[in-house]
Every structure is written in structure tokens, then in C-alpha cells.
Image 1 (cartoon, helix red, strand yellow):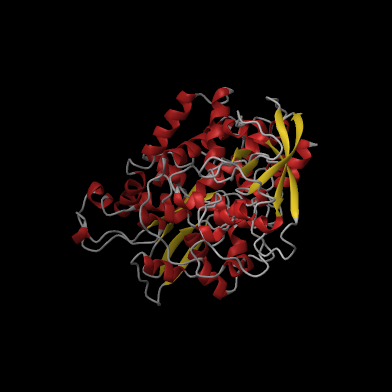
Image 2 (spheres, rainbow, N blue to C red; image 1 turned 45 degrees about the horizontal axis):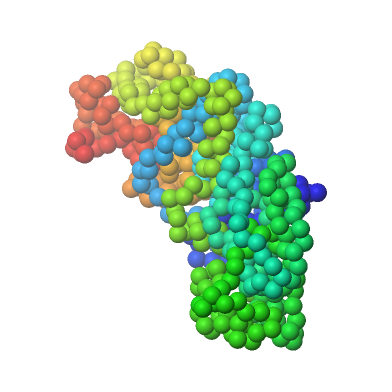
Length: 522
């Protein structure tokens, strides 16, 4: 029964940070929700949904970024703004997430295709609200849950099982206040049996019901010290700002001891909450008393005074504590710890793979290939016809370490400028160019490069004449594209090493051209 209650309570909850669609949009909340009408079902990361996957919604979001590309132009423009082209180094957990994936793929525990399917299975809400590696973390957890490599229990932080024990005992007539749920709670949410509308409220003990097994632990099939259950009476007018009944109307709620704190007036003397008008006035909002939500406010007509919703309380904590782990980061931390504990991956393997990722593409692999093609016509023809073989001639591994891929090189000419994108995820020749830059993986680039490539190029300072054709290559399957930029004028007689200095990562993606020889030092 507790597990069923836990699941029902979890349904419809918004996790901190996960319900922010189009966060930077100037639209109001209702308009933001309407942007994805027909796509978003609002599925979120409740424990109930762990059985079918973390934050999964197999219908909404299954089309990936294409669902977002097919917006009206107005909504599209509002949703995806200018591309942030700044270089952003990956955080350690992001590198570890990438490394863990490649190791699991190498051991045959999961595949890249499974990862893609799991990402596409996220709800449309999460397609927008989660960052790149956060999607990876949630998708990887889903796959490991599906294949029974890990369990739901592995993804529940130990702090969720910590139940505060209160040394206080209460008698009938005692005045108490209810603890407010304002702490930054970890993902997933603990199971609570104290309704939110009484959080922070003042009440009176009217019955001591005895000791019972703690449902907050039973929800996870755990046992702990029995908790004393009380019946607590509250004035309706204290609970609901716009309550329109008589002053003496009350509500009685069952509350376990750890959720209660004794109330003492300034002189230490208790007063009957339900009979003393003076006590009620003392706790009226006009007196400026903080009942756990820490702010003064007015409520709209008809609004229930619930002392702040759980979702809003949690989101406020996130906004104030940006350095805190996000729910997906917590998922990754627990998933990594479980994989290491079960010896699926060793700590040494993970550290070594992180080091490999940090050095991947830093040996001038791409520039050496391009420079050789600029000076050797036979090599150029081989590069354009069989880039994998051409790479091997220079001792370069062309296939990605996540899956067998085929490197394909597209030549820029005076007639054609090539641009590479992956609208579905972020497919990229990482073995040649290293880890993809943040902007390449961003929704803005992935959605706009295919739709308005010339505008995107301008944001990188690249202006293509209208007499030239811009051809966009969408890397959606097993090919990994690299652009061969045009050789700059004024480089006749240059050596391969000198020419390689003119070839940048961005020029091999196609967002820029090769460096001007005059600006080589910059």
C-alpha cells in the first residue's frame, strides 16, 4: 500500500529544474507550456516512472529535435535564439559520463543506438529542459535499469532514507507548528505523508494515536523506529487565505511526531490555538511572522494559501544554489558508484578513459590530413573517396570509439560551402576533432543550422556570397562528416606543417573558413 501511495504521490510532480521549458524565453508560463502543445505530456521523474524508465515518455519526444524544428516560425524564433559560440570546457562529471558510455559500449553492455532511443524516449519537456550530458545520464540509467544491471534502489540517495527522530512528545492541548519542507531535497523525492497545505502552520494536538511503523521508510521496504502519530487541529482560516467559512471551522490532520515542533510564545507559555483569538492574531501575516516560507505576499482571488508549492520551493532553492547537483547529475553519481561497486567498470578503466578523451583530437589529426590533401593531389582524391583509408595512411584512427563509423570528407570549392550538423543528437568525428564543442551540441545550432545555415554562419563571422551554394550535411546515421576548407591564397610553397596551422576545428565543421595566412599567429 505504501508503495502504491508513493507512486500516486509521485505522479504529476515537477522535479526541481526539470519543468522549465524554454527557460530564457520572454513568454509567460502559460505560453511556454503551449509552445509544446501536442508534444509534451508532462511526464516527470517520479519513482513511479522508474519502472518504465527515468523521466521517460515514449511517445512525446520520440522525434527528437525534429519535433522542435517543425514549429511555426514565430515559436521557433522565440525558442531558439542566437548561438552561444563561446568555448565551454566540460565539467569532470560530463567527461566521466562520456567515458562511462564508451566503456559500457566497449563491453557490450549497451549500444549507442540504445542511448539514442532512450534519449528520444524522454518527454518533450525534458528534451528542452535537460542539458546535453544530463540527457545522457538519464538515458544511460534507463538502459541499465532495463537490462537489470542496476536497480531502482541504486538510484535513490541514502539521504532520502534519513528520517529525523524527534525527542519531543506531546500531550492533548499542546500547540505545535508543522515543519516546512524547504530543504534542497535530492532526487528522487522522499515519500511524505504530511500534506503540503499544513507545512509551517500552527495547530493544536487533539489526540495521541499511538506508535506506528514509519510509512516514509515502508515505501522503500525499509524499517526504522516507530513514530508517534498525532491528530492535529488547525483553523481553516489559518490554512486558507480566502476561506469564507466561520472563524471556528477547523480541520484535523494526522501527523507523525518528527514533523512537529513545539510552539512557545515569547514568554514560554503556551496558549490554546483554537480558542485564543490573541494567539491567532499573533500568527497573522500582518504581524510579519515567518511560517516557513520566508516572504510576505498577497494571494490572488480564490487562491489557496498553501505556503508555497513543493515544486516552487524546490525550484527557488535551485535558483539560489546553482552549484548544487541537478537531479540528472545525482542520477549519474549514483549510477557511476553502482557500476564501480559491482565491478562492471573499474575505477582505473574510468580514469584512463577520461584521460584519453581529454587528449583525443589534440594531435593535429584533422589539420594534418587537410594539409596533406592541399599539397598532394593523389592523397586528396583518396581522402575524398575513402577518408578512413586516407586517415590510416597517416596513422590516424578514423572511426569513433563509441561505434563503428565511416569518416566522410566534403570539399569546399568556389561554388559550394559545406556545413556539418547532427539534428538528432550530436554525431561528430570525435576521433579526428576531439569532443564536440558545446555550441555544436546545443539545440540552437542543431535546429538552426539545417533551417537557416547562412544566418548561423554569420554568427560565426562567416559570410557566404549568394552565388555560392551552401550545402548542409546532417549526420544522422553511420557517417561522420569533416569539411576540407579551401586552401587560402598566398600559401604557395608552404610546408604541410605550416599549412596545418591554418586548419581549425571550426573550419573542418564548416562554420568558418581556414585562417588567413596573415593572421596565422592569432
